Length: 614
Image 1: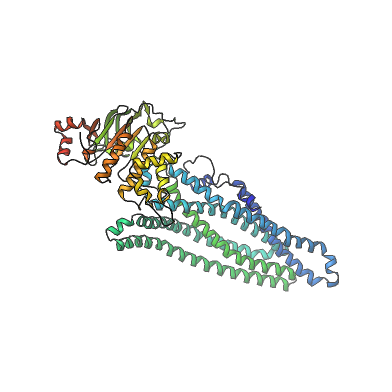
Image 2: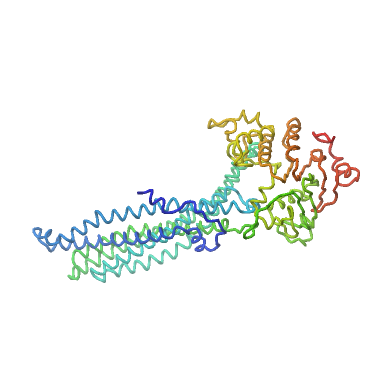
């Protein structure tokens, strides 16, 4: 039966993720799609539970009056129908309704609701641009996803479940008290006015401090995760104490709103509890006064005092529920700033798939300055660049640091959109095709090789997920990675291709990581190949062996290679020299050395590399 309730909502909705709205209510509504009906039914069942529970107090008052007024010999025969009805309510109806409500809350909503939020938020963030991740801690972003999903659930469910329950409960309570004597309502209404006043004073302050606390918590988590991620650097530079201070600084910032929150909580708790004691005293005193004047029965006293005592307990519960509600609202508001950021690189509606038939790449008057105005006093990173790379041509990009080499590659991959001009592949403007189809046609080996915290097999097959075992083994062999892969093990007992490589491949050496990356690219076998210092982490013997594989890989492909070690690209068909975002020289190695320009100066500063120039 519980499985039925678990299947009522979908933890992994299939709709395409879209940018969440910025407003608090709109944001919660955005992530509540598909959960509306269960939430509505939950609220109705809460209201019914509240009415039935209050009716039990009313019945207790009636029972007291019956016990005072009726004879034991005739009591059961006279009130049989009422007694049977209340027994059914207590033993059957309330347990069944509680079971239904609990199953709806725990099986249908508490698990699936936040999971659907995480799923949609994660899918949206995966489509964010590279710049989004470069401006924040990865741990902080992950924390926002986890915190916000739970906070949205709590915000919506508390509003609908708790507040509906409280509203109906209090209304029913007033009704049954008034039915005994309307004057007994007066202390409760006065209590309500003061109670609302306390909430209006404390809750907005708790909301503000909770928003500060949520942001400080994310910052603290981000700093701690950053330390763990870069533990090798910390150990290398003996900066354990410095990292302690770095984390403590954020922890101290986090504690400030925590202390303010706890002070407010103490003030709210003491104020509400004092108000509750006054309510119990006032109701009891007024009930006794009315009873002394024969205005009410003993049963009415029982109803009024028992409901006042019940309200005393409920007020504490309501106080923390409302405080928690606004704490969650603060967390949601903080999460919106991260999760609702618009993606800077978007596919056009109904973007077509890129089809590479030749492999020609053309940069047409491309300018780019990382979002800054192109007409600033300082030259743009890429300034009106025109370049055509013929199908199957192999070019090398050369230039001093900051000349724009990596930026040009990032623009080709559409990690950023050009600010003016066009980039075309086989005549197709890359801004008009889908990003996924563009990057499927491009393979890249980078200098800073980052592997997924998964097995060697998973990392290599990332280049071609449907590759056969033989294709995977062949790629590893061509990348000169087979020998060290066979010797790998991990603490879980996995070995070889199934061994885990650690976060970012930390368990492997730089050269091993690079060979895994090259195997991944060999397996992908895309028509356009980018090599960004592809062999920089390899020793000369391994580099010479892999270079033969790379030469085979480059056959019939359009290749763009970046290298500071000029000997590794000297054999390219054409070398392009960039300076301040412009092409200042181009030609073969021999032509550029003879020209005596920037390339010749760079070449003169180097003594050659590991690869021959024959």
